[in-house]
Length: 270
Image 1 (cartoon, rainbow, N blue to C red):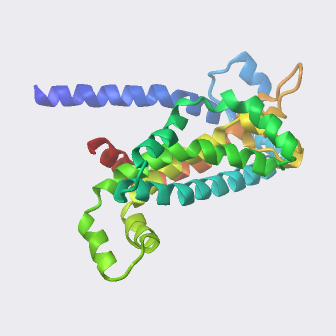
Image 2 (tube, rainbow, N blue to C red):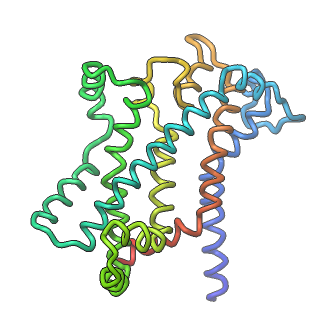
């Protein structure tokens, strides 16, 4: 009976995984089919690989958009972690007046819809004449801080206090304790928040669409819109571009999935 329950559970998980993977599978298959065939028989399997879609995507500057997204994502994630780690350490290990109120204030950022502030931020960027990259990196960092502080703090609280006390006895300051002891131990949590933030920034469209003015600075989501005209869309090139956009995130998930699971489990148990 237990074996049957296990088989049913595994079968259900496999079915759910297939359902969630269907859009990605269809996208990859469709990227190797002519656009006309997609409209006639969207679910057919290609008789042969049609690589012109990837050539069209490359001619549409998908490589440039990929580099722009990579730059924006890496800079944003690095700044988010660099700012969140000291804050999470302070809230987890230091006692100071107003710490609870300050943490609560930071976490209220989780309750604010990011795109609800789109118009005020646009007006602010226009008044300050902020450039394309800075105009989107700033909001990405601001909205990435609350969740990152929350998850890192939950992990830092679990680290044995004896390690911190021993480092203080040896003369280490708080910054050295953070970067030499806490951050290496908290690699699963750091990997988790880095993947979460990178996935959101990589796929984010409204901020990038509104704040980026120069075509050469477009990120991938905005760049893919250029493959769609007013009356017609090159769906083959769009699916090829989406496939290219998914590959980096898939590699990150596969490379750090063990750390992500450990980071989420630690936070949940705490």
